[in-house]
Image 1 (cartoon, rainbow, N blue to C red):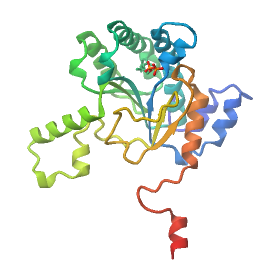
Image 2: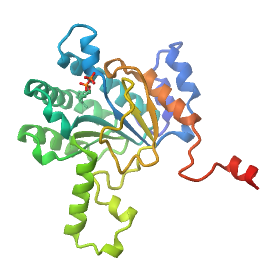
Image 3: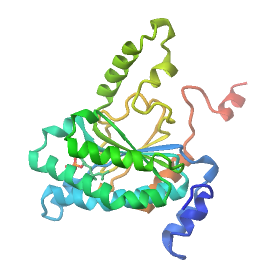
Length: 266
Ligand code: FPP
C-alpha cells in the first residue's frame, strides 16, 4: 500500500456497497487534515457496560487502534498521533498499568510487519527513559525498523504529558545555548518531541468528555476539536471518516476572519 493515491487505497479496502463507501467518497482529499491526534477514551466504561474487568476495554481498544491506523494511512493522512499512556496514568492500579504495557508490546510485535508493508513510519513521544527497559527496547526496535518508510508517521504518546513536554523543550533550549532573543515560536517548537511535524489540524476525543487532558498542549493551539460519544473500543473506520468530514465542514480562522467575512466587512 502506498499513500500516493489516497481515496483509491481506501476504497480498495472497503467492500463495495458497504455504508463506509459512501462516507469515503464524500471526503475531499485536497483538504485532509495533515495531522490527526486522538485521545482514546472510554475503555473502562466499555468494559463496565459488559460487566468485564477494565483491562478488557484496553484489550478491545487494540482492534480500534489497528483499524484507525489503517484507515488513516489509506486515506493519506500524513501524521496520526494516539494518546496511549499519560504521565498521570501511573496513578492507576499496577495491574492495569502492567496490562497496558503488555498490550503495547504485543501490539508492536504483531503489527510491525503490517507497518512495514504499509510504508508506515513509527514514532514515540513522551518521557521514554522512564519506561521499563524491555518496553524501551521494543519501541526503539519499531522506530529503527520503520525509519526508512515514507508513508504516514504513526506516533504513540507514551508516558506523555503536554506540560512535561514544554518543560523538556525549555530544558533542551537552555542546554542548546540558544540566546533568549533568538527564541521565537518556530525555534521553540524545534525543541518539542514533535519537532519537524505539522501541528494537529484535528483533535478527536472519544467517549464524550470535553477535555484536552494535557495532550499536545503547544501543538493544538489551532486544532479543530471533535468529540464523539463513541467509546474507544467501538471506534472504527466509519468514525474516523465522520470526524474528517465534520472537520472539512469547519471554517478555520486562526484568529482572523474568513474570506467571506472580509468581503462583507468592506
Ligand atoms: C482511556 O480509557 C484509555 C487508556 C488510558 C489507554 C488506551 C490504550 C489502548 C487502547 C491500548 C494500547 C495502545 C496502543 C497504541 C497499542 P479509560 O480507561 O480512561 O476509560 P474510562 O474513562 O471509561 O475509564
